[in-house]
Image (cartoon, rainbow, N blue to C red; front, side, top):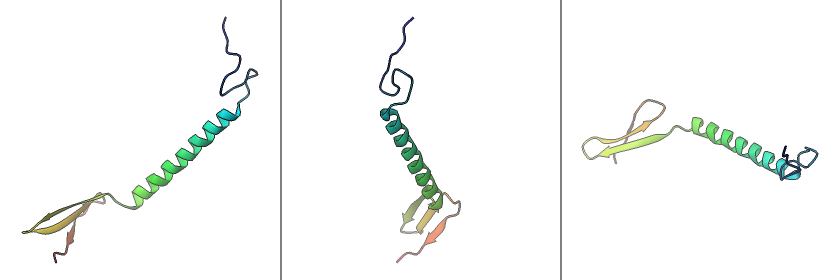
Length: 72
């Protein structure tokens, strides 16, 4: 039977190494950044716009209702 006698993330006794702690810290930081990005995306709706000389401009947002844009 073969077995691993130590490696990058666990030592020969099965204890976590500093490399594993660094990976776990990096993953936790990434999860926090993703949560912050998702909260920001929910706060500010994604919008698109359409403009023509005849109709003027309209802004369409994911919030669901179009808004008229004043033509100057």
